[in-house]
Length: 293
Image 1: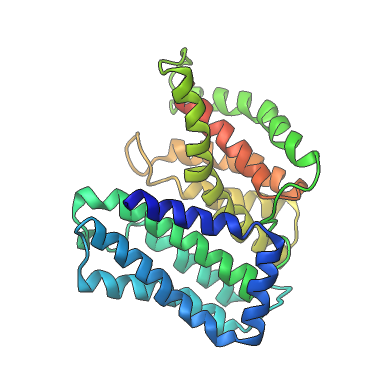
Image 2 (image 1 turned 45 degrees about the horizontal axis):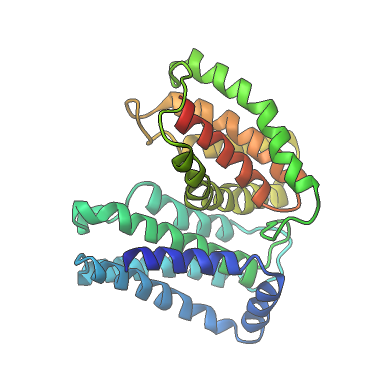
């Protein structure tokens, strides 16, 4: 049953790839803008139901979930309805309120340790879904590229990006002591094949929605699409890995490597017509690291 909640959240996120669904959401929020306030209650209900299923629900956890989902809605509500061409300070505040509580595991003390990993994944899915509803549906920012691939370019760009970036990342990772020497895979071909979907949907796509469709795109809309914006967005992506293992924290080695990888992901995002393209490159990089290093 807990897995079903994650599957339903993923299905909801993927359904928004459909342009018809996006238009419908925009139409509803345009004619009934107050309905956006139903979203925090619905998503908080999903989170609380997930906690209840695994015996981790408490009233304080309910209040935390409601506050977490309502805060970015309030920012976007105050910024005004879309379509918006230039992001406001409140838009960036909304993204920070979606991202930072998850990054620093806010409220972890309210959850039993065995349940923390699962509820964090649920909260991450809720955050991505909420971000899409707010910035695609309510503010309607252009350039998020949350749509299916539209040309062959979206297929070969991640492959070309991998061919260019992988040797750089491998050499850099080994030289700074983040990656060990390469080795042959120790897991079965079936496990390696199944990991493609797990990494893509569980890590690559959510992170690319957050760091490319939202953060990099809004920076581009605000400051232009030059190299400085690409580097700034990549640095933010890299800094998000400072609190990741396996090395001692803050993990500056991971930050350096993730920043360089972020440049590759961001460059593909700028050139592709779909965020699925940098997500595919992201998956290839993570998959290679997982099985060969």
